Structures are given as structure tokens and as C-alpha cells.
Length: 464
Image (cartoon, rainbow, N blue to C red):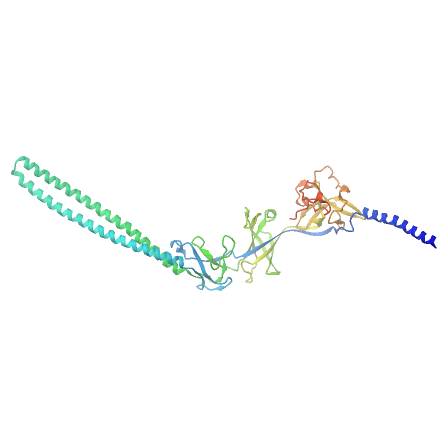
């Protein structure tokens, strides 16, 4: 019995010593396929799309603004005191907003005092002119009498001594000269008085007009709808909508808009990588965040040629306008939209997930299963979208590929495509799809950092 028991133990030990290493070797030969995610090469239609979010707006609208003469009132720090709720349907002449009149009341008081001063100055100038010209006319009368006396004296000196006669002539000539100068001075004083009256009169009229403008603007601070429509708040430069308490000025006089809902468009911004794929006239599938089950059809109406930097963003984007076909009354300006633009469509092609593609030393490769073995296969790629890439050469339909590299990836030799051994690395050709790689295994820290095409293997492929 003891011999049989010892024999069993010996056989069990031999089995453990033989079977366990063999199993380990078999698992090692298979790589990590049991623990790796797999996928198959698919054939079918392939679409390349650009997806963005946008906001509905109405390109045609009527503006609800401050009075047109608000600039002439010289009041700039106005604020909205009250405003009807956004989305309110109004008729022409309905109340839309009230503007705070406090700055206008202060300005009115100031201008009224200035006007009183200008009117007093005008009256004073009028009195001064009357007084000065009256005195000048009286002086002219006196000079006329003096000249008459000198003329009589000259006539009486005809029979006097020559010296007396000559003196009388001189006195008469002086009187004539003084009279002529006095007339010139009177004309000049009259012109001076008229100029002074025009000056003070212009200042008085200016203050009168300013006061009238202020009164008119104050009346216009109650703003009514110029046409029927739906009230939509306008946005400030910061992107926030104007509401009660927001500032308005003659430079930004619009308080709200009344859009024409029969024409709608979606305003969106596309990054500089995707904008080169867009063209005017492309079809756009538009969805509403408020009703994801609903789909609208649109077309690209305009693509900006110059990029811009949006608030709170470091990336450059390009403005794209999408025209909505057949809008209805349920659409409202400001609704958030999802825009899907199909930029390319391919029929009957092979494609795989982007995660299955790796770039090693500029060569795009996949890890293909061939029975229990793993083959590092070079592939030629084509168009790509956010999730998948077209395979032109190197794979067959239904082939199984790994979605992540195996642990022994460095030990595998690349199976090159026929004729590609003497060609430059595929990643150097400029093919966007070939510049994408997937991250290496988590337990390979040396390969964890991203790398561009041509760099050491293991750089993750950026989508888009």
C-alpha cells in the first residue's frame, strides 16, 4: 500500500513538472490574445463627417433701439429699467422696454441752468449794444454841430487877416476829419454789437436745442415695438444677453430684436483642422438639443476665411453659417443645435477602428491574428473619421486584428507590403490616417509618452 501511494505521488509530481511548463509555453507563444480586445476587418460604406455644436439665429430681424437722437442728448450711461420676457409675442406699438431716466433728468437740470445763463448773456449783450450804439449816435450829432460851427467860423474869417482865415480853415478841416472817423467807428461798433449778439445767440440756441433733444429722448425712453414679432434679447460683447440693469448707449442702442422666424440658420465654429474639409453647399444634418429625436436638413452657407479666438478659449476657430431648410414656428433663436457635415463618402471599402492602427518608425501597422500567432502587418491607409480608418492594402475582409498591441510587440518583425521595402516610411507621405498610433501597453513606461510620425513607436493617434 505504501508503495502504491508513493507511486501515485511520483506520477502526480511528474505531471505537474511536465504539463505546467508546457501550458505556460503555449500561452507564451500565443502572446496575449486571450487578454487582448479583438475586432474584424469590415467592408461597407464609409463616411467622413465634421460634427460641431451651434446656435440658431434669424438673419432677418427688426431692431428695438433707443431713440435716434439719443446721441444728440449727450447722455451715454443709460441702463434698462424694465424689459418684457424673452420670447414674448408683441404687436406693433406694444411696450417692450423702459430705460432709466435718471441720467436724463440730471442732464436736463444741468442744461436748463446753462440755458438760463445763456439767455441772460444774450439779454446783457443786447442792452450793451443798445447803450454803446446810442452813445455813438449822440457823439455823431455833437460832431455834426461842431463841424457846422467851424464852417460858419470859416465863412466869417473871409475878411479877416490871412492868419485868422487860415486857422479857421484848419479848424473846419479837423472837424470834417473827426466826423468822418466817427462815422467809421460807429459802423464798426454796430458790426461788433451784431457779432456779439450772434455769438451769445448761438450759445443760447444750442442750449435750447439740447434741452429739446433731452426732452424728446426722455419721452422716447419708453420703447415700443416697431413691428410685430417675438422679443429676443441681444448679446453684449462678452456674450451675455442684455437684460434689466444692462447698459445701453448711442453706440450700442439695440435693446432687443424681433426676428423673422421664416428664415433660420445655425451659427457654429469649426476648428482649424476640420475647416479645410468644409465647402459652401455641403449638406448638413441638424439636430436640436431640445428634441434629439428630431432632425433638420441644412446646407453650408458661409465659411469664414479668417480664424478668430473665442472668449475663454485658446484655440483658433472659423465661423461657419448653416442655412436651415424649411424651418417652422417651433424653432427659436438661441436653441442649441448639433451639426453633422458629411465631407466624404466612400462605397464598398475595408475599414478598421482607429485603435487597431499603430505607427512604428513611420510605418502604419496592425497586429493580425493568424491562428494562434500574431503578425505585425504593414498596411496602407486612406480616409479616416473620428472612429475608423480605411485600409487600402494589407488586410482582407473578416481578418481579426488586435485593438491594442501585445506585450511582445518589440519581438515581432514587420511584414512589409510588396514594393514598400524601398519606399520612405508611410507616415512621411502626409496621409493623415497614417499619422495616428495607439498607446502602448500600460506596463511599458518607456513607450508611454505620445510621439508624432517618425518618432519611436507607441505614440497615441489623435482623432480627427
